[in-house]
Length: 402
Image 1 (cartoon, rainbow, N blue to C red):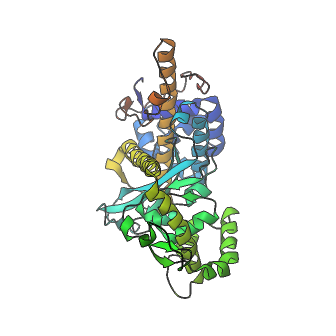
Image 2 (tube, one colour):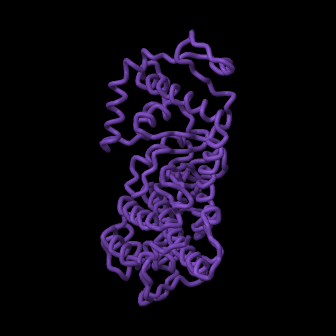
């Protein structure tokens, strides 16, 4: 693929007819300045671009016009454009997604900065939901001390793109019983990666029930009476989430206590035990299922490396001291990553089409081994100059590669 700067890639994708209209309505700013918003942060783009001295103007537009909601709308448009290509269909069906977090550095002398025990250092956690087609669907910025599984369902509920997964994978933290219970009522098939399988409890439906060969796995029994009593309350919670009245993370935070007064917590936990036991039986009985979960969670790890590679200014430290501005930096970076992925798929599609026309053999087995996280052709350094007069070819959505 031809070498290009990150701003060049972003400006090319936003210059196409489909995305041009989208970005204009999202940001509601003049076209000559709109392209600056495709960088991870407005100030570095303004300082490095020599054609227009717009540092103050871009910073002002960022504060007055760009919001998290508008950035999310732009991200959705990029995802929808990406989903129209044929190449990503060889990587996944769009029915699966995986969630994982990565640490972002903040300055230590920051009231919002927290020390991360596992990763070390001060910062926050960027939490991403990545489709099995490699594109990131949603992003959060959460404190280091928060249990990540609380936010695992938000990404699918708030996802407005054309890619609508119904199966969600996660790391070991996602095996919480209340999360299983709430996901089940929301119609989400939760399939996390299991690390400490021996420490998990399998629950019987009836204590008098005996299972041939696997009875030793089961040590406790489900309290069906508790579930039956609180079914109306649990359904009301699920309907409120579906209606957009409350976020799943808000509910899971309230369910994060085992207080005897919190009867709804025990009901969700009991329902989650039923769902999790069924999943664990499938997990230990299917090698293919374990391979699929491992492969999907690896995609989130690859995306984390890719998105951190694109965030190279300021030694990878988020310099903002306001929480909503920190969240916007994560959204900016998410947008840039998706635009580069979109550009890579466009370039890969044209290259594969050219190889096919030359007589090279290309099949599904070859294509499924590719990925859009390519960085060798990207120049992150130097002058960030933009050529607004450059003509951009239409996107090759329907190009045949097989």
